[in-house]
Image (cartoon, rainbow, N blue to C red; front, side, top):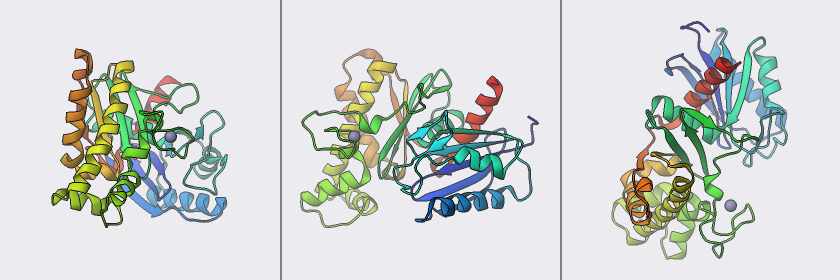
Length: 304
Ligand SMILES: [Zn+2]
């Protein structure tokens, strides 16, 4: 790979499709995004290919790195994102191989890509054992251990949102009870606040209310932070984490989320090695997945 040639990075989510040319140093050269079409599988695929062509603008990338919402089948190169109902076992790798012939195409989960991006160029730099968490409509996660993303044999490692912190807790769409996601996702915090008499509509309004001191909104963040803290502590006990990096829409609340999160971690950390963890918000914001997808191709190509 030459030092100049970029990777075409793609980030596929339920609400938007994003693509960018990412330089070898992680700089985002050209970026574009479009709302994910609520349409047939081929229409969503065409939108992705159009977006990629717009970003490439005739330039040949050295590789294509795809980050996609799960679940994925890495070996088959297919994806079945929960929030893109038209795509079930959709051959996204094959689609990009046809659209950009002659270069390697890699596929990784979006939360793992986001974690890897933060580790490479964001708030995770220098970490030896990092957990990245994306808190938005749902909650995703990814581990970066010793500088390498930990995928697991099926590519699905890092599902922090579905770690149960209370077997008697509310039912989660996954079928389990008391998952971190049923307390700490944006919609979960909003739902709980509404039950307590708050009258807004979405997570952005809840953030505004918490910022102006609304006690129910503040309590909703505290409750979400407590659940996140329990998930982080459990992961820390297993993986000896030194860093957690929080991204996604809800992380825009900044210290409204981080302050109670740090307090609950400090209160719940029983062992000295668990107390070492530092918690930060994303430094790359919406680009962490794109930058991580590009980094993933570098690591894959270096290995092959
Ligand atoms: Zn669950």
